[in-house]
Length: 147
Ligand code: AMP
Image (cartoon, rainbow, N blue to C red):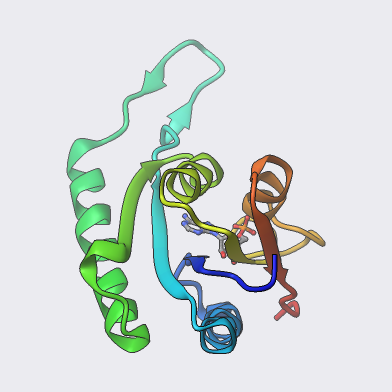
């Protein structure tokens, strides 16, 4: 492969994501590639107790989370000149949704941060790790320094 044509940037809207966003933007410019962005609202149950009572995922909270994620995604889209048809807001497991959207849209490079919310103490966060292991295209894990 001599150039990337479609880059998917996975964003978690964490403060340190500027480095990841900038790197994706650099690659888009370098390869004159199309850019898509994705954010996944994690639908892990709020609590799975040891005594058999699963507290169900709160539907109002979900609506709230989706609405505020949508606003952030639109803002990011404006910043990066990514039109709404290439802004993906999904719900579910971040790694699985990132891979699904990449596969279904001919993405040839996924850009993630090395760690974010879930991986501060890790070399590689769980999302980055999962994407690296399961993606069928190239993955760039942009190294983030610990804060
Ligand atoms: P983490 O696995 O939380 O340490 O995050 C590592 C990287 O995965 C982040 O820097 C983002 O690029 C990406 N990521 C994490 N969570 C999400 C999410 N919910 N939606 C999209 N990308 C995510």
